[in-house]
Image (cartoon, rainbow, N blue to C red; front, side, top):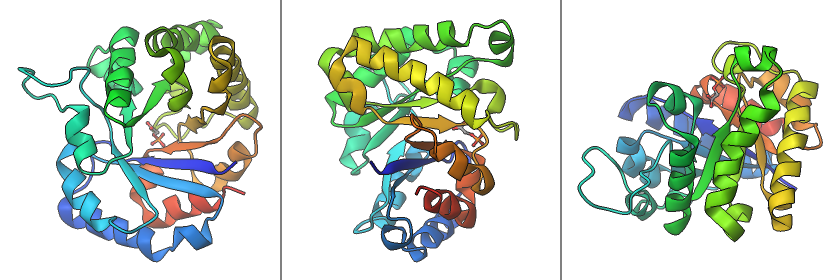
Amino acid sequence: MKKLVVGNWKMHGSRASNGELLQGLIDANLAQSAPNADVAVCVPFVYLADVASKLSGQSIAFGSQDVSAHKQGAYTGEVAGSMIREFGAKFAIVGHSERRSYHGESSQLVADKAKAALAEGLTPIVCVGETLAQREANQTEAVVAEQLQAVIAALGAQLADIVVAYEPVWAIGTGKTASPEQAQAVHAFLRAQLVGALPAAARVPLLYGGSVKPDNAAELFAQADIDGGLIGGASLKAADFVAIARAAA
Ligand code: PGA
């Protein structure tokens, strides 16, 4: 199976720098030079139109970094899945740890957002992960199970149509990557939870995120249950993101 490599630009960029970054990805001819990776970038809402036009006819998909749980209505500041989809976006990240912690998003809200994304034809990339304190207290499995359980309960048969990203909070933007063995262990646990809930969910891609770099991507991607990566900092440099996509063997 091809790996899925997704960039999460977070709140970075400008119209000019985004254009240069995307041009770098286009010039790398990823369809040929990284044939074992499906590649996407998840961008701030306001850039969806620019990104859609720049990536038109290219093999690189794109998405948003959040989506409203609501379909439409009086929700000032929210962006509906239908609006994101209208630009040709494929993905919507939901439940990133930065949203869970800085914006108080509960696992139930994240599950509702995943459901809203699916209803509009977007593939939600559902993020789960533990903090350092939780890992040290041996709560990693309990934490990710609770986060995933809300999604399992909300989605029913659509569980097979999502992407899950395991992003240990202590590894995000810190330069501390989970070891391939640590990541694999949690991925195997997540796979078992998914399959236990719905056999068809065996096909759900499980991405690892947290300080993925060109020099550690290959060994992470070599793990049995690591189907790709969600890349933050390294997705902002075309050369690094291209090298990560090419690490998918
Ligand atoms: P990082 O971020 O690659 O900069 O650690 C990953 C993420 O938060 O998605």
